[in-house]
Length: 291
Length: 291
Image 1 (cartoon, rainbow over the protein chains, first blue to last red):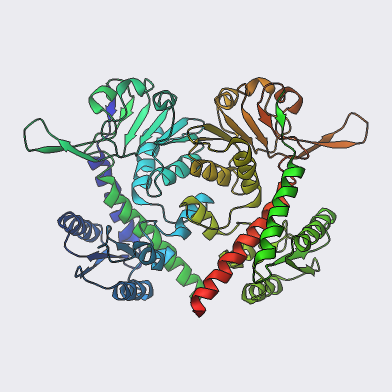
Image 2: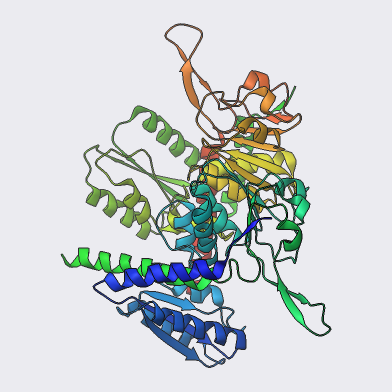
């Protein structure tokens, strides 16, 4: 039976560490969240973010705009937040209403405050191994792996999925950890055999229980990023499952994250960590400019 | 015996295609090359670039600065070239003299004119699959592969080497071609076995003849980016060899590039292609802004 990672406990200890560091700072990091429209899931998520931001001692700025907000008004808000010295991190909650150009909005966020790591600049910094801001879910996966495995040098890592938000950044981070990294995806042949070479297997493809127990190398570490809603046994009900067939995989893997309760709870904690990183860099740069 | 790719002939046909397209344009693309100091190899290379630029019908601007040029003067030149409407591509010849900050100079180049694809912005565009400018050697490798293999969907590609300039961009490009991509490097275990899984093997590690014939899957396509100078049989003489033990590999591979005469001759041709791409994008953007 694999060791099952409790992402909730790990996230709690991560937040405790952030709170302890925030308490030592001479300034208060500020995180701004922008929510356009009334999507119920987004509203719950934004409320959780705001609560956890305050709990670690940061300032939370919430901007709730009506669904009919224009591109120009949203851009103007982003630019005002870029210029606001009390704001160190800016998160625009996605998805935006369809009449808005998401790419242009993301591009308007100052890379130094881009705590979701979505800008082209932060993707380029990650690709070139330079300090930037890394998307939250990939960062969460690496923190879990570092905690459990320590030095990953020479391990074979297989990432299933090549999205800009998850698969590709995770591959870059695993490469920085000196793993040999394979990126597999929907066009990959013999995916089962490729998965079986993995000491570290990351599933980030968004297909429920695609990866079977017999695709996993015995003792491997399996990180399941997928969150798929599927019909439950009880008629009319649904449940969440990952990209890995957990009940089989847990028999083979050495370490595994469950869904829910694995990677998911790490996301907000990593957002707060990015906000702290951004705040420290911005304030250090300001100090240098003033001295 | 493998089919041996003649990079010189391929580069000639690429340049002929560029010249034909330049002849149809309503404007003349301009490529500026900046050379600081007197490095003899760089001088030869820059002279070749200038000649080939003119041969395809573009304007060549050469800026030769003394070795003692200051950071401020070089930055001022880059900024002037950024602002010069006749210049569509800017190449600062590397390596720069040691007293100059290469990273800051590269960062000053307008991403739209960065024909070497070295800026963080172009690395980010490549990582996110958006149109940018791709480093010349990786672009050359992909053009050779497309010419020989056509559709690469589902092929296993192994890239040995993870530099920002070659290995990592090639991996991104192979992923765009729907290959399953493995990035191996100096910390990789069982490199021979990993190489043997490759339908496409890219050697970009800078270690002479590291990759042996029996590491290669029969029929694989082998692209050797390495250029290593080693002692020749004749005392006191040297010769160039690649990262692949060519005499062995040519017996096993299906298609292979030699060193010299494989990927090398593609680099300037790809630079000209990037200059053409940059010029067309810049002029199209200007037209849109004026209309």
